[in-house]
Length: 348
Image 1 (cartoon, rainbow, N blue to C red):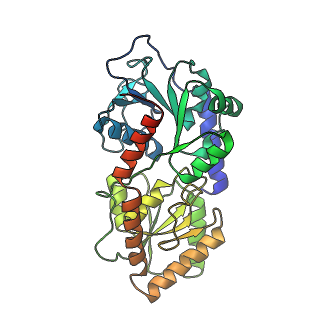
Image 2 (cartoon, rainbow, N blue to C red):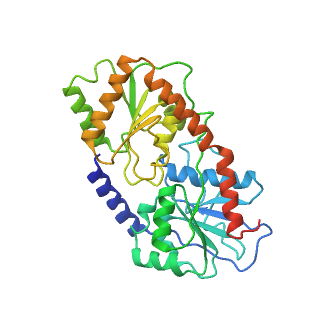
Image 3 (tube, one colour):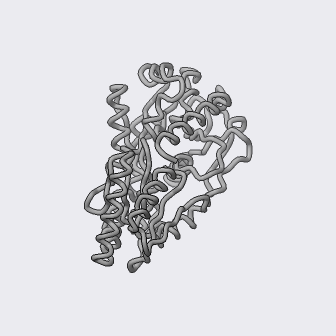
């Protein structure tokens, strides 16, 4: 799937979502014994880094003694594609009280103008590029003027810059983390394996691979399209890979590339803007987003280096893994989440 097809699919998905709409949030007049932070999440049980991040935030808050839950629409729904024991509830079972706090993802921005002014809420905007995809003018006014909007969270420097430029208000960047117990580098160089995620720019990568096969540049290399796998299987296959191809487009962050780095891969490809902060040329090869010729040349250069200096990719993959372990640790993530809710005035 090329960049144009990604845009078409995103548009179709949002058109379908417009027809369904976000769930109706129920309210109650009385306060609970413990004010709770509710993270609104879609009932979507397929791999989604954004939804997994919502679950992760709720786990972090509860472990820190702050009451929190994922708020789904259907009673009994829970994501099953990754292991979790996260506290979940549904909109009918958990009406919001006056001291509770609702966290609304940017993909549910259509809900924002419909919230009563007294509902305390924040926006968790994991992809600044999606901010205006639904009801753009109403959403803009809400970001600018809503008295109930206490703050906005983002997950990358790029999204922070984008939204601060748009709305001229402080935007809080919270850090993501990588589970380095799951995603970690091998002890020695791997075989010649190039991996990628087909759901992220399949057509672009296939064109690059066809181009390099025409040049006989892929001889001796195995291509692994990591698709439809559990989180554990993804980690295993990334750990067995040497090079990871990234074709993300207008990303809020780009977690798959970071997980590949944590697994010791030399990452080549597009940073999608949100990933610019971690695509360091010292241990990766960033290519301008959408530049297929540039990506082909970058990958062949990498293959040539590896042929001339066996272990060249592995040594840089180790450097990338060390960077990810330090920069995107669970400790830094937890501290940034707790600091945000303290900043917006939530008192557990």
